[in-house]
Length: 505
Image (cartoon, rainbow, N blue to C red; front, side):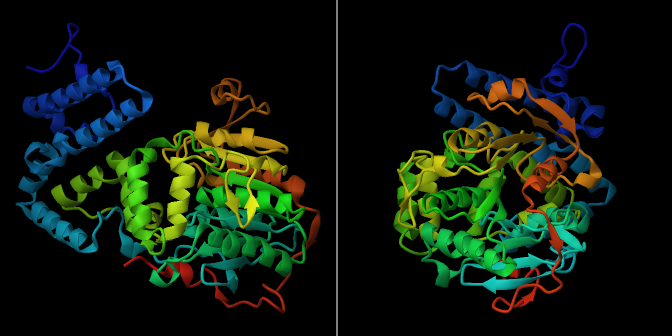
C-alpha cells in the first residue's frame, strides 16, 4: 500500500517534492520501489521533526541535525544496487557491464584515495585552466606573485591585488575565459596581481600564522607597490585570504602606513560566532590533539580538509557520485569547478593550529587587542578604509549572517552585498551570463535579518556592482605598461607558475 492521504496525494510528494534521488521513472513505475522511496522520506522527516521538538541547546540540536543528515544520506535506498531500480535496470540492459564498469571505477578511486567527481583528464592548469596571460614577478618559499598583462591601452592607475584562500588553489578565480574573475578584472582596466600560495611540503611545515602574514600578505603588498610605482593599491581577500588580509590592514593602519586605498572581502569571516557546520568538527580536545601532532611543525594534509568540506555537502559531493560511478558504472562529466575542488592544498601545521584555535574555537580576532600579530595588537576597528563585503546566501562554509558581522567590526565606509548561491558558485558568477541575483541595502543595522528585510534585489552578477564601486578608487587612468615587472622584479616564468601546479600526492 502506498503512503497516500485522503485525497490520494502521495505523502512523500509533500515531504520532499523535488528529491532528485528518486526522480527517475523506475522509482514510480514499481509499487515496491515507490513505497521504498516514500517510506524512507517520511521516516527522515519524522526524525527531523522529532529533533526539532527536543528541548536542547542550539549546538546540541545542530549536531543532531548534522548527524541525521549524514546517516539518512548514507542509508538512502538510492545508494545500494539492490534497492536502486535505475541501477538494476541498467545492469539488466547492459548484461552486467554497468556493474563491471562500476567495480573498476571503485578500484580506481580506491587507489586515488578519493571519489572522482569530474573527468580529471579533461583539464590541466595552464592548458585550459588558469589561462589569463601574465608572469610570475616574485616568489619566496611561501608564495608566488603573478602580474597579469593588460588588454586595454589606458588602465586604472591603482593596481588590484588579490589574496585567494591558501586552503585552495587560486585558479578558482581563473577557471576558463568565460567564467574567469581575473580576466573580467583585467578587461575592466585593472592591472591585476594574484598571490599563488605554495602547496606546503615537509620543508615548509614550520611556517606560522605570522609567517603567512609577513611573507605572504605583507610581502605581496610591498612588491606590488614597488613594481607598480603606486603608493596605494586596491586589495581583495577571498575566504581565509580575507581573514588574513584584515589584521594586516589593521597593522598597517596602526603604524600609519597608507598602502591600501580600498578593500574587498569575498565570503570572508572575521567574527566566527557562527561559523557554520564546520564547527561541529572543532572542539578543545580535537584542537589540542592537532596542536600536539603538528602545532610545533608538520603538515595539515589538504585531503583531510577536502574530506571535511565534502562531508558538509555529502548529498551533493559524495553520494551522487557513488551512485553514478559505482552503481551505474558511468564516468563523471568534465566540470572545471569540481576539478579545482579535487585539487587540494596542504597547510603548514603551526599556521593551521593557530587559525583553528584563535578563529573557530575561541573567536579572538573580533576582540580588540586580544591577539598580537607581527608584534602588533590587532584591533579591526582601526581599519577605516572604503570596504566592499560580499557574502552569499547559501554559503555553508561562511554563513552570510556571520560574514555580515564584518560590517560591525570595521571602521570606514562599508558596502555589504549579498549574492545568490554558495561559497564558490556565488563568487564565480560571470557578468556576461547575467545569471542569479544579488541584494543591496545602504543601511547597516546590527541585525543581519533587518538588513535583508529592507534589501533590494537586483538581477545579474554582483561583479558589475562591485566594478562600479571599485571605479571610485581607481586613481585616474594611465597608459598600460608594455612590460611586466620592473628592473628589480623581473618576470620569472609565465603564469600560472609552478606553485599552483604542485599537487598533493
